[in-house]
Image 1 (cartoon, helix red, strand yellow):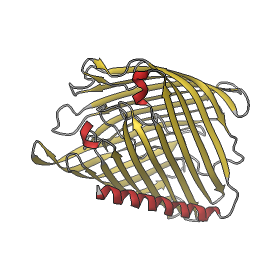
Image 2: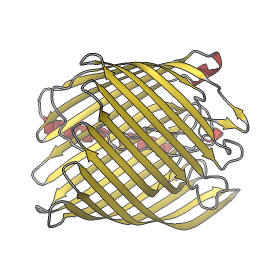
Image 3: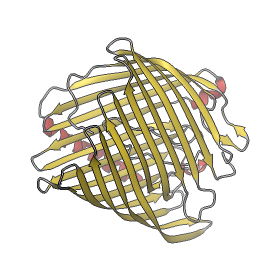
Image 4: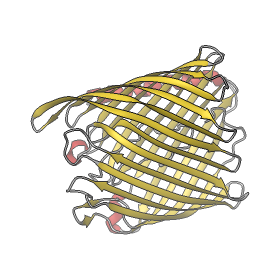
Length: 422
């Protein structure tokens, strides 16, 4: 599609421009490269997390997984830039599961330039990967990128489709005085599928622009803000054009040196027009939105929990309400052993007037890392996932999977701390 190709080129130019901004802040200082390589073996009793009627497409399967990333970073007091290319490849032992094999490519980047009163930055995410079953991205992103700008909820139609996505999110923070600041941010996400409309998923383009005013309260431990935003969404499969606009009030507070919490609430209004059954359907929908979160950051443990409701795009060709719960917990159990727990639950209501478009997802991950040497570790993990669809043709009774992984990890050591901060 010409529009999507134009968006991809624009996104690439924006990444390059943002990278130049970050590089200007870093000058000619020294760069560092930190490798992170995982080699692991996994067994999964339903790797595609997919049912078609009563039939499970792929039964229990075992695979060897190689995952290699290289974090290239330049951090200075007034700026930082980071690039993280990554390659992930797998090989299945069972012949019937070899059609699920893939080699995925990723590139993440972020940058920031700090002035006396203005801070300019960006995050970006480019990926070419194959989707198994439901599209379920990082359970709780904790890297430099933060939340994935293209974390898309969709149906489990299709198996191992190739998806190419580009997400770019620039922002500007302007300090008005010692207590007030204005934040302007944007986002563009372009998603294309190899098979596209043949298996139910659709190429789409999303754009967003927002502005936020924040003010620190008298005790300097609480912050009050108001945010206005607008988004545009275009999908190919049903010629959907959806524009949304919204407003939300935000409040955050540091309860102590370790604990902080935030809450926000508002409304989001969407105006949509799409084709269905040979006719053009137009309408308007108002949805209340909210976000409640709590966070702990200590020396030996960290925790983050978030419950949110918002309108989000999906690969079915609609913008629909979505409720989501995220929980992440990490703890250093000893000087050499670290453990973690992550939970994600999603209830996607589906589009207004579209029968059987609702979806529900859940995933829980438990992992442990035992450091054998400063750069070498033994890793093990267990993951449980479940999916429920209102569509009678797929997993209307729900599908589940259990995966156990063991392996080794090599991670280089950084010589300097990150300056971006949480």
